[in-house]
Length: 388
Image (cartoon, rainbow, N blue to C red; front, top):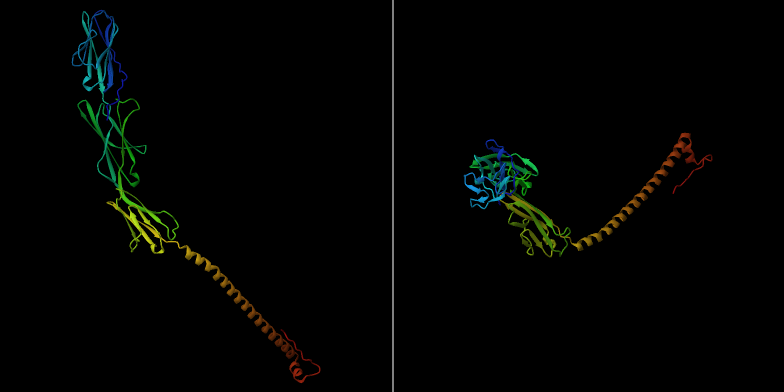
């Protein structure tokens, strides 16, 4: 991780003046805030300057410049301007040890000085995110986020799926900087494997709206699943069938076993990892094929029922079907015809018998039918009718 981005902080202005007897303001200074590694400008404004000696010293009271002449061999300090109105020096690559009061002294009849306070902030670097223990499906995962150096203390936040998570933060001051940590806990499932969790760090040393982020990819372990995919839906004799066992799991199962029910695999079968190749298929290859995979969290098994399609047998069966149907229809027609004939004969016999009975009944009612019939009386004629 590189050094924090260098930039000039907006100056926090604090005007301080020193006055000589009977005169106006002589010296004014400005307090400066800068981020570590950035650039700071320290300015002394002069009023009623008459060419007197001007001296600028660092917090250790070492003279940096004497009347515009370099006194300390620190190339990070450069004299940018020396005029009757202003003395301006430029500090590059600001460090924590540069922090403190810079003296601007004006030697007139009375010595006057003012102090420009330099404050150095430390921007957080990219947080370090670690997991406490391996995450397992159905359990909880605990993540920690650490920013070892910041000033002021960095504020840490957690995000997951663009939603903020509530973490527990703590900090420890180490000299001029802070070490800040935060932890977060949440439950995980297999669908969370590969998800992104973000730890974000912010403080005033960073530009407005900027932050330092670290993304952590969740590693959630879970039991395997298996599913068999066939290279074709309809399998005919002589075809080559390729079965693929699609396996998921974390850790991923490194061994897949192929079986065929209680029977051994066909001799022509080629099992290679996730694929099982069955060339030159025949009806003898029919059966239930299984693939099995396992890891330390569980076991998975998938089934595939193989039925080899025999075109010859199907054509023969299809050819025999019409003849059977025609034979059945003919038998039904013959049966119906016989039933109709029997019914007609039965009806004719029943009608003739009923007619004679009613005729005889009519003669009996007259009291003369029987005698007339036996004696052949002239007054009665024998009535004969035949029904065919």
